[in-house]
Length: 101
Image 1: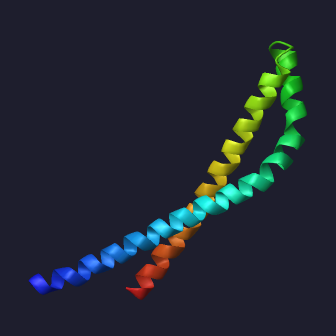
Image 2: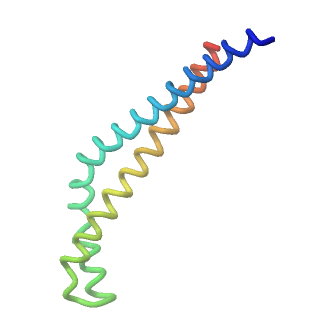
């Protein structure tokens, strides 16, 4: 009974390293995609957001709104991409691990 515990712990340690690597990979890919996608999304939406803010709230806050919108755009893209890749890799990893174990 004592000897059977070691292979199980070894499998769990390998599984933890595998899952941690998949999470790091999804973070890295999310950073790369965010780097390339943020300027495109920002350039297509910033004028609308600045005009909307000036019309419905107060004019004169263009710089602050522009900076805030850039941060929101980058954060949104990062979170969506990370969530997508994490889900893809974790589900794929669980499927692969279930078939191999």
